[in-house]
Length: 221
Image (tube, rainbow, N blue to C red; front, top):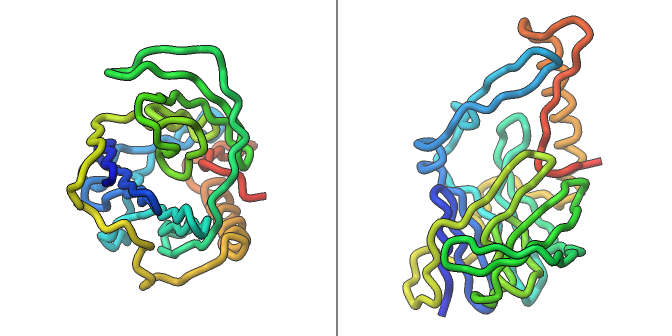
């Protein structure tokens, strides 16, 4: 038995041993919206899908037996890579707040991971300790999640649970991209993010004395 969680352009597939969280390249391109970067009183709008996109899905694979987390992602310079990490231990705080989301009675939980504050709502009606992106570790499925640092919200649209239909291979992402440990990836990405900030600061849209602000989902320092 497995689980399929549909979130529009992203799905979460699960079995007893592993899961894959998929951002479909083609769906992301079709549904991409401009992203606004604030620079003092100046706003720069960029598109989230760049021209170098190779059409391959972005995947976060988690193996519950080995504790491996393997992520196909990209540096800020758009070069694709695979990052080998371990499944994090999240220090969740269960809150007393409850609300109903769709068909499910949900409870609130909060935590901070790599300097990003998360607020989520989970339901024990589906007793799976999983959720969008890397999130996991609660006594039920995460139905909604908010990353305050990136101002990013994940909302569950459709649940197919349980299911015996195999619609996506639950396996590590293809290793055709360069492979890095998380620490090696972090060192490179810190440099690339710094280059991006300097580029934005020096762009024609920059106001004198202003500093660009781009809120990435996680801190790397």
